Amino acid sequence: MTVRDIRVFGDPVLRSACDPIRIGDPRAALLVDDLLETVRLPGRAGVAANQIGVGLRAFSYNIDGEVGYIINPQLVETSGDAELVDEGCLSVPGFYFPRLRFPSARVTGVDLAGNSVELSGEGLMAQVLQHETDHLDGHLFIEGLEPGAKKEAMRLIRMAPWY
Image: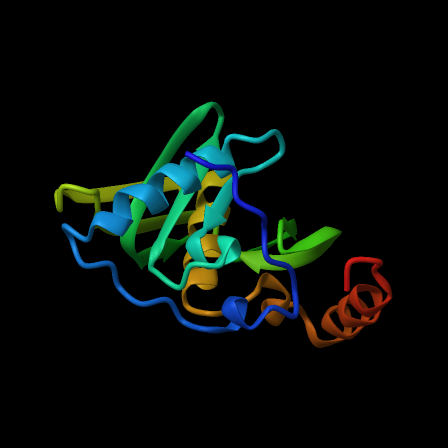
């Protein structure tokens, strides 16, 4: 298991939709191990595979001490009225912007053995489920900002020392 470096805004892997993982692929177990190790660092709620440079469809999460993963996740349900939440991203370090997210979400996928997995939650868990599946679809959270906020976010990002 290895803590992997997080790819930051501007890296093309973050803008590409991830490929499904073939169950039984020996690389999948190594990827999951790295995702779990990487998300365990303090301040991390979720890590998508493309954030560590791997274009495969999986993410890990760390919410309220519960650490886990899901392979080939699909966002199948959101509910409630979308509300503005301050959202940040490891791939856009140091910034938080107001983003509309649904208060409840559900994703389905599989584990390494191919068993069905369903993750659902409210609040931060719902936000993570939406955020990480967006990553796997090749979308960064700043794409969902209100136009004025997005313009300001881009201005600030271009001034960031890591950009």
